[in-house]
Length: 288
Image 1 (cartoon, rainbow, N blue to C red):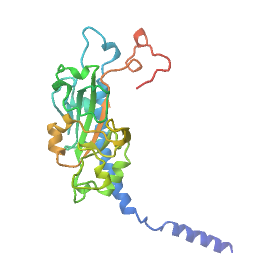
Image 2 (cartoon, rainbow, N blue to C red; image 1 turned 90 degrees about the vertical axis):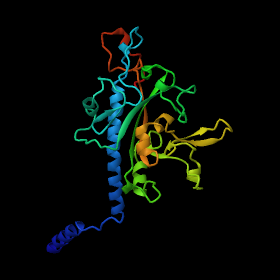
Image 3 (cartoon, rainbow, N blue to C red; image 1 turned 180 degrees about the horizontal axis):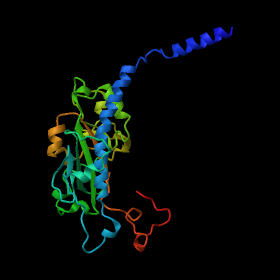
Image 4 (cartoon, one colour; image 1 turned 180 degrees about the vertical axis):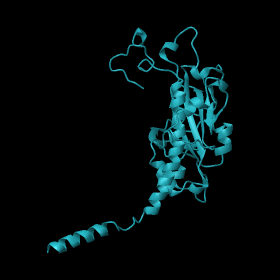
């Protein structure tokens, strides 16, 4: 009897190593590859975002007679070991790349840029057009440092044809990976515009201007007080950017659009000298 128990245990152990393959293994494999492609894109975007964020004016640099300016202007960017746009000597490729994860290899078709806009009267509406950068909107050449300016970091990359269907839209595997990525619909997605030949409800709900896919919230329509799905607009100045037009005007692209602060606020602590009374933090202050 004991021998049969041992033999049965041995057979069960062998069978357990011969389990059937998951029926969705191919789909799971393709989604993993898609997530890897997205991760490479997000790594560069997050690194460039962190770099531009590090250039914000510190507390002890603000509100002085001879206030310094941030080192960037609209159009400054990075792609494949090169800085692009009008840049100062304080912006270097090595400094930008120091924010990349160890082992990350830049790709030639991923672009990351910074854009500065005069703040709209209603604050920062997701549907703000922002057709002109602040430099082209009758402001000073150093306007990216201004308190009345909003600064955005945008990254874009054409989606490989391997991940597009016959209509030029992302495949179901890529869509699944995109929609599961943090910030989808708000700060990340793919460029999308209404197709007048498509009568589907999903397509008809899109605005008539380019947006990031996956609208992220409902808001009141000021004209008739109805609730409509809101999308993050791809700003006009971005659409007019030569690198964007070359790579994404007639192509489906991954796009990330994220606001970055150009100044520390009074609750920001990293640059504070403990002996400086101007850097004391108020109780219950919110840290950005």
